Length: 314
Image (cartoon, rainbow, N blue to C red; front, side, top):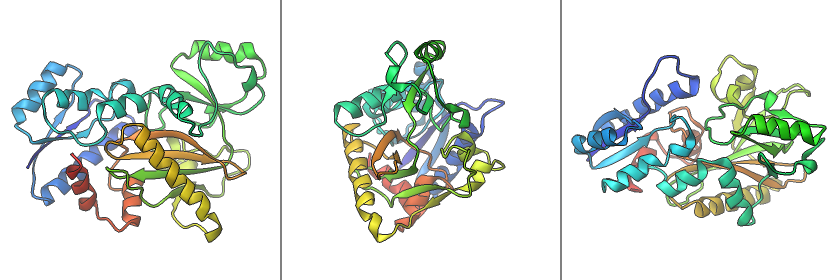
């Protein structure tokens, strides 16, 4: 089979998360070649006419979607949508899945309507009186890879006017109730199979440091957060009830958001062991050292087996 890997346009001054897409392309290309496929790589341009011509010219049987860094995650659905218009299969989440999960506020509204637990949130122009005096997480609405997330993202507001003014000045952000507790992520293969549950453990964190998986923890190897945030897949017997509930919720989220492609669902769990869904990341990172691949390894899968399954799903 001939596979066209679509990826981001390279540019100078790339952030660490953007540069990571290059590592993904290399790893996926190597795996596809090992599996006996013919492989080409091309950049996805928002000039859709140009990109469509590129796809058609390649003569590919399938597009492997590794596009992650368009100007906004609200645009990521354009990749499968364009492939659909050309009647060419595309790996990963479909257009509906990417369009909903690409906007965190839209996604949270869907979770809330479905009765699935997600932290309370506040948008620009809404009454924030119930959000005063409690820790809030300020998040970008349409960014991925923890871009814009740091310790400073967790803050409190004493006055309604202060909070309203902040959101008015940052219309591309929203405020979410900060859940002080543990963090888990569950990776999901196409079709809904949930891989082993991963807890992100904050090891030797000072009491005053907020326990979040922010940009530093994901992308900056020299940072304290990166070095002291560790994955764990081992849980005592008394926590199996929580683990099963996390799996149930992850599958419910995956189904609600279109049941397509591969994904990762992020959770916080409070002191009462109550889980809260933060978001679903469709088409999460699949670099060799990524959390998704680490979870697949825990399930006994090799890298090539993961890539082969992502191909078969389309």
